[in-house]
Length: 69
View 1 (cartoon, one colour):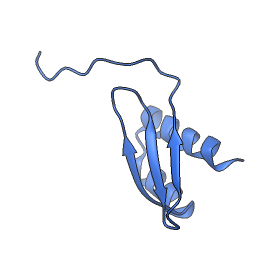
View 2 (view 1 turned 60 degrees about the vertical axis):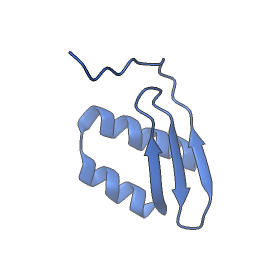
View 3 (view 1 turned 180 degrees about the vertical axis):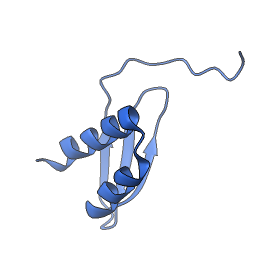
């Protein structure tokens, strides 16, 4: 499976199941050093241990994040 599709699957699965330990193990196994998750859009920026940069665009629409009730 292509890395970008796998990473998309990992992020969708952790959103659905909230199994963060399995998520971190999957990231480490696939040589992911850092990731930035943009809550409002669902987009993800990833940096591997080799210094490669990967950008994943979400299919979700923009969600409004409000800090006041």
